Image 1 (cartoon, rainbow, N blue to C red):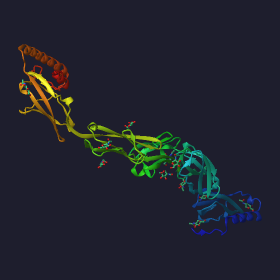
Image 2 (tube, protein in one colour):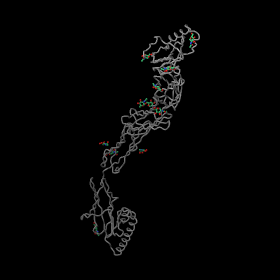
Image 3 (tube, rainbow, N blue to C red):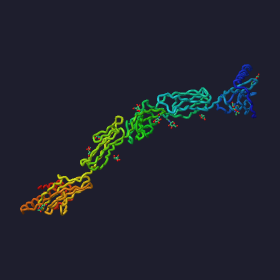
Length: 549
Ligand SMILES: *[C@@H]1O[C@H](CO)[C@@H](O)[C@H](O)[C@H]1NC(C)=O
Ligand SMILES: *[C@@H]1O[C@H](CO)[C@@H](O)[C@H](O)[C@H]1NC(C)=O
Ligand SMILES: *[C@@H]1O[C@H](CO)[C@@H](O)[C@H](O)[C@H]1NC(C)=O
Ligand SMILES: *[C@@H]1O[C@H](CO)[C@@H](O)[C@H](O)[C@H]1NC(C)=O
Ligand SMILES: *[C@@H]1O[C@H](CO)[C@@H](O)[C@H](O)[C@H]1NC(C)=O
Ligand SMILES: *[C@@H]1O[C@H](CO)[C@@H](O)[C@H](O)[C@H]1NC(C)=O
Ligand SMILES: *[C@@H]1O[C@H](CO)[C@@H](O)[C@H](O)[C@H]1NC(C)=O
Ligand SMILES: *[C@@H]1O[C@H](CO)[C@@H](O)[C@H](O)[C@H]1NC(C)=O
Ligand SMILES: *[C@@H]1O[C@H](CO)[C@@H](O)[C@H](O)[C@H]1NC(C)=O
Ligand SMILES: *[C@@H]1O[C@H](CO)[C@@H](O)[C@H](O)[C@H]1NC(C)=O
Ligand SMILES: *[C@@H]1O[C@H](CO)[C@@H](O)[C@H](O)[C@H]1NC(C)=O
C-alpha cells in the first residue's frame, strides 16, 4: 500500500538522542538482544546525489520477525514487505542522515543502521578577473570563488596555469575563496589561468568529479623606466619635410605597444617596426605655415596602461627670398637704375658685397646706367640664423642697358688703300643694344659694299662711303674712303697675280686645315674644289685683309 508514513516531526539530532535513550534506558533481556538474527539495512552507508530518492530494505533471518520498521526523519513510503523484510522509499534526500531499522524477534528488539551520505557538485567555480595588464616581476594573486558542493571533506580546489597545478587546497567555508600568489614572468604572457574543483568520491566507489572555471588569459608587460629616444631636427623650414624617429628598447611585448608622435597639435602618422624588444617609430614631419615659432615634438609609448614619453623642441621658421629687383630690367643709357634686394623678417641680405643696415631690411644700390653696365649681374646673398643654424640663399639678376648705336674709329678705319683687282675685306663694326644694322653706301652711286667679308676690288669701288649703324634707338654715321689704285706695270700685275694665287692657295689650305674638323662634324658645308673663299671666321678675315697701305 502506497500510503506515506510521515516521519516524526523532529529534527535529526533529537532523533538520534531519542534512539540512544531508548537503547540505554530500556535494556532488552540478555540473549535476546545478542542479535542472533540481526536486522540488515540495505544499502549500507550509501552515497547518492542530493535530492535523489532511495529504497532502503530492512531484512532479517529471524523466523518470526515482527514490526519491522524504518525510523528516519526523511519522507518514507513502504514499497513492499514480506516475511522477514520491509522496503521503504526515502524521497528528497537532501542531506546526510542516519536511518535505523528496528523490529522484534522472539520478543526481543533488533536494530540496524545505515549512514546516508549525499553529494552535490559545486554551483559556482569562478576565477576572479585578472588585471588587464600585469607588470612582469610583480606578484599576481589568483582568487577562486567556490559556492556549493558537498561533502566538503571530499572537495578540494586546484588553481591552474594552463594544465600546471599552482596550488591545491580543501574547500572549507561556504562560499569559499581560495587564493594563490604567482610571481609573474614574461612567460606568463598569454597564459590561461583557471581553477577547478575536485569532488573525490572514489573511496565510495564513485568517480572523481571535476568542475572547472572559465579560463582567464593574462597579459604581462615590461615598460622601461627610461623615456623613449626621440631624434628630431632642431629647426625646420615651413613647407619642408624631415624624418622623426622615436625608439624604445627593452619593451615587452613590443608589438603590443602603442606609439603616438605629434608636432604640437598635429598628430603624425608613424610607421612602427618591432625588432625583439626594440620598437622604432618613424614619421615624416612637414612644417605648416601656421606652426611658425617654437614647437614641441612629443613621442609617447603606451603599454599595459602605462606611458613613457619624450619631448623635443623644434623651431619652425620661414625663409623668404632673397628677391632681387631692378627698377627697370632694360634701362636706357643714362637713366638711374635702382637695385633692391629684399628678404623676409630677420633675414640679412648682402647686395654686391654691401650688407643691408639690419636683418629684415632691404639692401639697395643706385647707378647711372652706362654702356658698360649692359649685361652686368647683381648678386644678392641672404642669410638667416635660426637657433644657431645658418641658412643661406643666393640670387642674381642681369641688367640690360639700352645704348648706341655707335661706331668707333678703332673698329672702322677711315681710309683704305687697295690695288685694283684684288680680294679685300672692309673692316667696320658698330655696337649698341639692341644690336644695330650696319651698311656702307658709296656716295653718289649708293652702291653697298660688303662689310667683314672678302670681295673683289675693282676701280668702281673707288670713292667715299657713308657707313651707317641703325637700331631702334637711332642712327650713327661715319665716313670711310676707299682709294682704289690702278696697276702700273704688267710685272706688277704678274707679281700681284702670283701673290693672289699664292694667297688663294694659302687660304684654301688654311681653310681646309681649319675647317676640316668642323666639316667632318657637319657644321660647315664647304666644297673642297670651290674657288670662292669660304671665309666666315674673323681670324681668317684678318689674315687676308691685313694689307695696309
Ligand atoms: C529485501 O530483502 C529480502 C532479503 O534479502 C529480499 O528477499 C527482498 O526481495 C528484498 N526486497 C526488495 C524490495 O528489494
Ligand atoms: C525536499 O526537501 C526540502 C527541504 O529538505 C524541501 O524544501 C522541498 O520542498 C522538498 N521537496 C519535495 C519534492 O518534497
Ligand atoms: C524463544 O524464546 C524462548 C524462551 O523465551 C526459547 O525457549 C526459544 O528457544 C526461543 N526461540 C528461538 C528460536 O530462539
Ligand atoms: C589561452 O586560451 C586562448 C583561448 O581560449 C587560446 O587562444 C590560447 O592559445 C591559450 N593560451 C595558451 C598559452 O594556451
Ligand atoms: C560539475 O561537473 C559535473 C560532472 O563532473 C557536471 O555534471 C556538472 O554539471 C558540473 N557543474 C557545473 C556547475 O558545471
Ligand atoms: C600621448 O601623446 C598624445 C599626443 O601628444 C596625447 O594626445 C596623448 O594624450 C598622450 N598619451 C598619454 C597617455 O600621455
Ligand atoms: C623647450 O623649450 C622650453 C621653452 O620654450 C624650455 O623650457 C625647455 O627647456 C626646452 N626643452 C628642451 C629639451 O630644450
Ligand atoms: C620691382 O620694382 C618695381 C619698381 O620699384 C615694381 O614696380 C615692381 O613691382 C617690382 N617687382 C617685384 C617683383 O617686386
Ligand atoms: C648719376 O648722374 C648724376 C648726374 O647726372 C649724378 O649727380 C650722380 O652722382 C650720378 N650717380 C652715380 C651713382 O654716378
Ligand atoms: C651663396 O653665396 C655665398 C657667398 O658667395 C656662398 O658662400 C654660398 O655658398 C652661396 N650659397 C648657395 C646656397 O649657393
Ligand atoms: C679715286 O677717287 C679720287 C677722289 O675720290 C680721285 O682723286 C682718284 O683719282 C680716283 N682714282 C681713280 C683711279 O679713279
